[in-house]
Length: 314
Image (cartoon, rainbow, N blue to C red):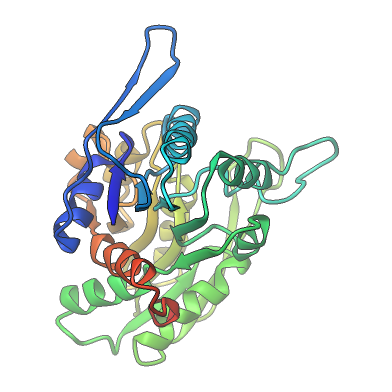
């Protein structure tokens, strides 16, 4: 087995390497002054089972090109199998035609990854499950719910009796229910949100009785943080005792960390390290990171040993 780390999230790659007791392979991955990516693998990979670890997070296009060029270099170096390990799959929110004459960019990116030489894809919490079908190669979509369940029990000292799991929209109900079941079938609430006019803040209604409950918002992506903060405020207005949020991918762009820090309603945001934290995110006292290195390392080990990965989906 060989592990190749792109530049998007070196700390996570190194953590996975430590879990597997496999060092990150030597590679020269850099950018020329005009923005072109250059890759040179410094070790022999002929006949090797190679895992390329690279999130396509900000800057999304640079990191995506880096991933593609690394895989092309490995293909030309005669690696026997290449698995693209993409903890955060960028462009996942563009998974359908949202209007006339718009692209399905997630499908385009899937085609690019396959064409570049990937034999398999391993990722975490795809924004939409159907994206697995965009690939014509085996694709494993892991879930971070186990990691969050463990952290929730630690924070609440094992007493989950007063918790209520909240889906931030109707589309996330299945995801929220999976966490609720793990936490001894805690009740579920749903945030009903809509925009009255373009550019106007969402109007939110809460479906479910949250009065006196410790609410946990569970989602896959937090970007600007606006919806999360507004949902927390709406829950508190309905009588919630406290509101925390657990989100797999902390994109957290454009001042989102500051917005979350200033929120009076949201007490905590827990994200995974699928995306490397920016300095602003790392400095925010309300934002905490939990690692998916164990989860990814175990999946990589099983794939390399031709063992079942399906139990990790539960």
